[in-house]
Image 1: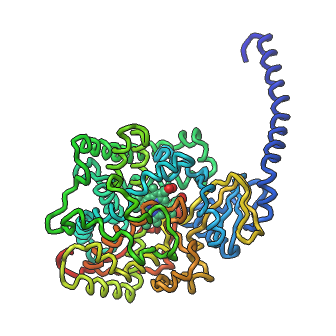
Image 2: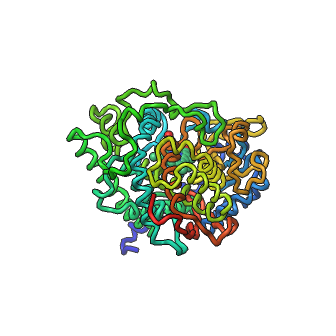
Length: 556
Ligand code: HEM
């Protein structure tokens, strides 16, 4: 206190006034807040869900390690087979696990707004395709989707082959050891993205793909913490914590790679060079002539596990894609930026960050789960190996596009892996209006976060007999033909489906077939030993531990 009595009296009066006004303000605000949430609360009360506590709701379920949270939420879904309401404090999440209800959300051109949790990605991905909405999302989606057309992807085959062989050579040193195959898969998928969609040579980057992938993995841990720990949500509070500081360092690693990628590509572009700067060894070249790429882009039977008949913006006919548009991702972005109308330089960087993240971590998880499955199910692995031997015999030639169409059993194993272990285990949207569900009995309230529970949808007993069993025959053509389109959604579906799904399937087929031509995978574990954690991307918390046994002395 100061020694001035008049000053003290003024201060006390001001403090008293503050408290006198504060209490009614809080009461009024609470009344307004409850009233403005009336619709949300009334409709939420009609939805089924696990019992919670006053005020905090089910927040206690989100305390603990990532695998614990994942298993607690998953266990709840045993009691709720269509809809499940969960309160995290004042935040309402509604999980959908029935394909009919999922369709209402994912097929809509209206419910395309991402939930508020995606905003934690903003310092990293800016307003890139994964999180943007409205007109910006629409125009950028229209620009980016054709760069993942099958015609463009076929031009990547030689680079997929070259990188897959390099990965096999690196993995050889692990023969006989138990090791985490995810490390190799992450590095391979980052480097393939750099050399294909980005069109730069991995050898010209300062950092290794591995360093970038590790930084991404740690970023995902932090983003997941922010989703589940309420006190880490406000930006100002988060930036004061140790996690805020770590995030800054990680973003430095991540952004320095993507900045360098854009700079490299710009330099090439200005010299008039288009296409990838990465070199493919002569013996691995399968594409002799560019005209080869143009043929047959509509391939019968490539529905990737969903019942056929529905088309989206990746299924455009060859004739719809003009020569000008047939450029790889970053070539097209830079060309589109030349007049400054379609995309700005800053937006290009955001899209590069988005594609680098979405394009590598998902496929790294998918391929690591695939290898884990091969190790655990040797009788199924032998069938994959038999298929490889039938296609390639003793030859060590690189795989062609036609070969990938013959890899029918490997594809079924891959789809079955994505069913049981979808790399993106949930998809979340923010609702701005009430939405009635398929049977008309429940209404999702405006303001809630609707969560499509892909992991659970894929394990419904009424759709997949013996749903927890790894059974590639779930993807025999007659079974997929009779299944609801939204019953298998590893790549989501509808207008906001994954733009990279054809890229992912082609890349994974080349990478995994190259591995299976060279190794048998062994594992001492069973699926019940997996500790799954669903922080952004589904992973095995204990690492993807496998062993390798060489099938051939040389790589092929
Ligand atoms: C096994 C591999 C992959 C899986 C399982 C997967 C899954 C998904 C899913 C579920 C979504 C929707 C996410 C949401 O709405 O929150 C999505 C969106 C997206 N994916 Fe993938 N993805 C894979 C590979 C890729 C690849 C290789 C790329 C790019 C090269 C890619 C680029 C994107 C982009 C840009 C989006 C946002 C699309 C939009 O909102 O319009 N993904 N992916």
